[in-house]
Amino acid sequence: MAGNTITLAQDAGPEMSVVVQDSTRLLRTAPGQKDLKGATAMELKDLQIGDRMFARGSLAADGKSLLAASIIVMTKGDVAARQEQEREDWQKRGTGGLVKSVDAAAGTISLTVSATGASKTVTVHISKDTVIRRYAPDSVKFDDAKPGTLEQIKTGDQLRARGDHSADGNEVTAQEIVSGTFRNIAGTIASVDAANSTVNVMDLITKKAVTLKITPDSQVRKLPEPFARRIAVRLKGEPPAGTAGGQSAAGAPNSGASNGGQAGPSGGAGFAKAGEAGPGNGGGFRGDFQQMLSRMPGVGLTDLQKGDSVMIVATEGSGNAQPTAITLLTGVEAILSAASSSQAAMLLSPWNLGGGGDAGANP
Image (cartoon, rainbow, N blue to C red; front, side, top):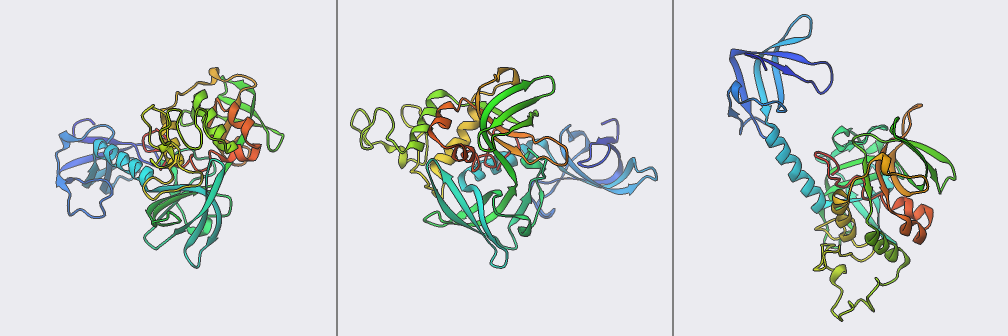
């Protein structure tokens, strides 16, 4: 900003100069507001780099500047607070899984919600007020999801719904849904090209090699070995090591199945019953894993080695463009040993849309 001229980075298109006049109406509003009833006046000097702004006025003939009659501002602090609230709400009231069927006439989506070793069907109810968003074929960011329609959603898509759950968790009245078509890959790294930010993986399901782009928005995480072993145990349907009949080694009841997946006294993550999806947290294990995934150590391309086992969720790719990794999880040898290739590949499906650690990312 220089004097009374603001340089605006448009969401789509080149930068534009916005000229503020003495008569320009400058208002601050909170994110999510549908009208200006609660807006308050602000001064030009209070604008900060990173604030969201909508300007209306007379556009210059060259299209490069605008003489503003009114400016509506959402401060970057307000935007960040709103994003944090939404992330928390997605964690509390979110349900994710694979689309089993869509009934556009009835406004319902049947969703297969998977936990370790089991799954259940959840019916998602869509109304005229439901916000529907759709990932683009090459999108890796939740914020890049565009307005969509129910008709775009098809069997096999990954979908995340946020809304009110029935008491048994089998139905969700959706306030918002986001969906997309993604690839699920379980396999081993064949090679890494750090210079071109790509990873070549041998897919254990298709028995074919696939090259994936890694971008700054890709989540590349390493699963701690103890946690990987616990998931493997669940996949095998065995009681955790050191327990007997649901009792801890000390004889106390194992509360992991009833605490909504929250961390227990030992600091480890509790587990909901396989396939369980409580209305408060969208499924103990899944909700817990989403939160844990964002806290797991990130790794760089140079840390990945030929022969490493990986589980990946990636975009479809478009045209001749390579698919882009959304989530790449290494340290999964125990999981791949315990599960079939297809079962392991699908383990990330309910999670990748549901709450990564990046600002404004994942519902």
